[in-house]
Length: 324
Ligand code: PYC
Image 1 (cartoon, rainbow, N blue to C red):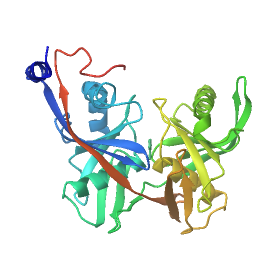
Image 2 (tube, helix red, strand yellow; image 1 turned 90 degrees about the vertical axis):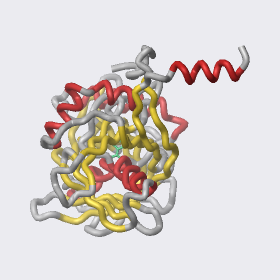
Image 3 (tube, rainbow, N blue to C red; image 1 turned 180 degrees about the vertical axis):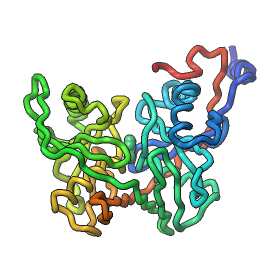
Image 4 (cartoon, rainbow, N blue to C red; image 1 turned 30 degrees about the vertical axis):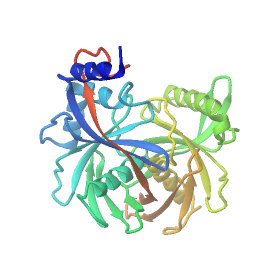
């Protein structure tokens, strides 16, 4: 069969496909897929109701958009929805290979750059509604995006977690838009050459954190020294679906800032530059709120990598994704 014939046959086969239009980007190495058209209609309820509806009735869209063969484990999806707060440019619900996120720092940076790429926004301030609150973004003329996140705080300090086969690991639990167990007490180098060990250890820590009653913790953040002399720390973050965050994790950095602030190790307004496992950096600062929580701001940038139309051919047994 010559190439021309097989190409034509492929075109014939995709005729009845359902289409989902997306823009892909990466923020410091971590991918985001913004859904422009063809996603589920979640109605006009509260964000909690809409996220619950997404999960209960339209979870197959999440799987089709993020899982193989259209996506991959590390990708975070961003479904644009009408905001309920009219001061917001848009609402967004973030999702990944296993479920739904409260907030996503790198995803927000990717979303802002995507909206700029589409010509929908220019430099300046843009508010965005998420299921965990309204965030404020600032798109700079140099392409950097600063995300002023939801209020962040630490709930537990110096928790001793018994990890079978490893020993006791001491760390904190903090909220930065998602829940994190954060520890420097892991004994590993945060280096890509150790990625398999890091993933394995973080999984064991997460199982033990859950077994000790902290089931709400969905991300594990290991902290270590930075390689870059301009950075103050380096992180490795295990995401809920088992992928490691390629970037320094915006919500993880927010949670880390809450711990640094509570320990008096970082003053209000002072920058904390955190590297991720690839060596790419986010810059974080915070200000105190009257209730003792902090308001973190995270700065980074993103690059557009694709404009695509996902084709969901209903005769393809994997068109709604591989996996749960
Ligand atoms: O940047 O907040 C973040 C994030 C969460 C999960 C992956 N990245």
